[in-house]
Image (tube, helix red, strand yellow):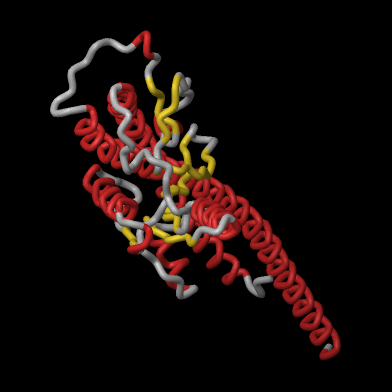
Length: 315
C-alpha cells in the first residue's frame, strides 16, 4: 500500500493517463472494425461467383486437377497460422496459437509432418522464441490486408502444394484463423483449403469461406449449356488459383475484423479497470489526507496543552 498522500496522488495521475490511452485505443479500434467488416462483406459476391464458376467448369470435365485430386501420399501438411502484428487484443493471439498447436498435434497423430506458414508478428515471435523451423512468414499488414498480400501468400502455398511430395511438397493445406461473426462473437476456426472436393448437389451454407473444402457441382439437369475457352480444364487452371487467393484474402479480412473487435473489448475492459483503480486510490488518498489532518490537529492540540501547562508552572 502506498505510504504517503503524495504517492497516492502520483498513482492516480498515472492511472488517469493510462485510461486516456486505453480509451483512445478503444475508439480507434471501434472505427476500424466497422471498416474491416465492410471489407469482409465486399469480398463475398466475388467469392460466390468464383464458387459457382468452378462448379460449372467441374461439371463439364472429368480431368483430375492437381488442386482437386485426393491422390496424395499424405506425408506433409502446411498450416497457415493467422495472428496479429500488435498486441493489446486480449486473448486473440493466444487462442489462435493454441488452436494451431492442437492442429499440429492432430496432424502428427495422423502421420503427417506439419509445415508452418505464419502471418503476423505474434505468431512469428512465438515460433522464433522456441527455435522452430518456419516454411514462410509475412507480417506488417494484419490490420489492413490487401489482395497483393493474399496473392503473395497464395502463391507460396500453391507452389509448395503443386510440388511433388518426394521433392518436399505438401499434401494438404490448412488455415487457422479467427472468424468474425459479430462485435461480440469471434471464434477460432480451422479450415482445410486444399485439396478441394467437388461434390454433387452440396448445399452451401453460411459465408463462402466456410465452403472452401467442398465446392458444389451443379445439378446436371439444371446446368445450362456453356462454352468454355479454351476448355473446362483451362478454366479450372485459371479459376482455382484465383479462388484460393480469394479465400485467403477473405480469411485475412475476417481475422483483421476479429483483431479490431478483440482490441476494442480489451481496451474497454482496461478503461473500466483503470476507472475502478482510480476510485480505489481516491478513497485511499482521502483516508490518508484525513489521517494527516487528524494527526496535525492532534499535534496542535498537544502543543497548545503543553504550552498552557508550561505557562501555568512558571506562574
